[in-house]
Length: 263
Image (cartoon, rainbow, N blue to C red; front, top):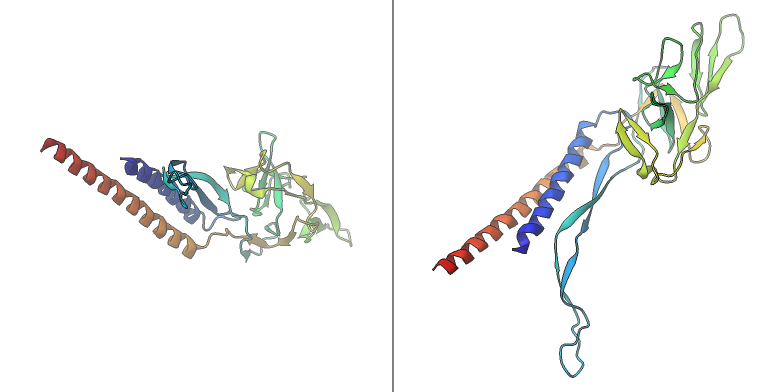
């Protein structure tokens, strides 16, 4: 029966939906994490009678057609790029972006990664790096004797150096933005890479139009809402159960039909 296969597509779709929701819940405390949302589309239809088809020799037409669908498919599991809440950490190298930009990170293979996680530190050479030791581009080097490092909303890094009265400029943090942020590919470790769908990165300084500004001593939390995710999980579970009941009902109907043939 067609209903068996149609309900099976519904069960597979909801299974994927639950997997996405579980990943969102697992990352509820991940800095800069952007929740995913599953998008579905209905599958092809079989036209038993088209709307407007002739119903008599006198030219009457059917006002509505008869169509039978074949189920559902998953189209995408796109990211919701809304702003997460800001949490004060009081760490001088923690940075949060208020806006749409991404930090640029130089990965070990030479590619540039992009992240919203601004929990940075200094390595043994005094370079500003991520928790995995990836250099934050374009490269900020803080002298060992530097004191009171400040990072402005526009990304300018300054520090007090012993023997100098005025703060010394240490560099400029840059951000990147994309025409289609949802098209970025997640590669783990809180990193994204550009794709043909996202378009090329547009580099600029914080404070510029579309880039957002920086907040020192803050981190951006994930934009996962636990209440919304639990509600979505319950709805997905119920949808899965309903599709499984359709399969059970179809099986019982087929069993009853086979018994008629045996009689």
